[in-house]
Image (cartoon, rainbow, N blue to C red; front, side, top):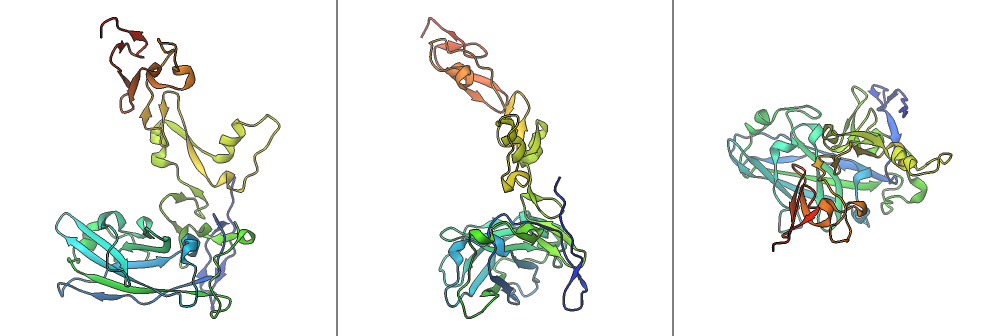
Length: 315
């Protein structure tokens, strides 16, 4: 059982609470995140700023290693605004194009923070969400009511070396892997309450483990990587991978498959033609395609039966 550590309080006047610590999923870095005050330009003259930007150093891709000047200027713009749909797009100010549009509704509240990912450089480490106040949980309607097409937000991410600002940024190496970090580097720390708000896909008091997709669709059990690995080892062997209790996955009930156990398996048996069939992992005895939504075989021409286990004499 994982038990996160608590060290109590922090800050110059010790007024801030620390958040639970967990093992980092990757290497530490010397990045000192600093997002400048956001500027907001209202297209309609009546809309209000609702965007919140946060930076998670552990999520920053190594391709963003800073050499010399490391500032990145980000532009976020509301592209469409209607009673039922609001979309936004973002770009670096040096680019002439925006990355693909995203729907605002999915990114309201800090629990649904959206990662800014560059198609050519990976994750920037920046996460966006729309809200009434930083760290709040505003509804889509309350946020969307004060949006307008063309609203533009601009901010700068300064990524300096926390040890020596004159030196290039060090994104870490194998010697800094998996050290203890607040919220395991996979969440935002609310210093007022000492609680973590985990990024999508992570959970736990310290965001110390992954979430099983779709709760295994109620057709399986969510278990650790250690448990999966142990099932394939000898009785007296042990699995000791650091991620054993961090990575979770679904073990599907009999008759179901897929990452979230949502697919219904089709019946299968021996191939009537003597080829690979159910014993070799083939669906529908190797003579049909499985409709995983309902678990029914669609047999190839010339074959029939619930498992496509019979051959027709008529073609």
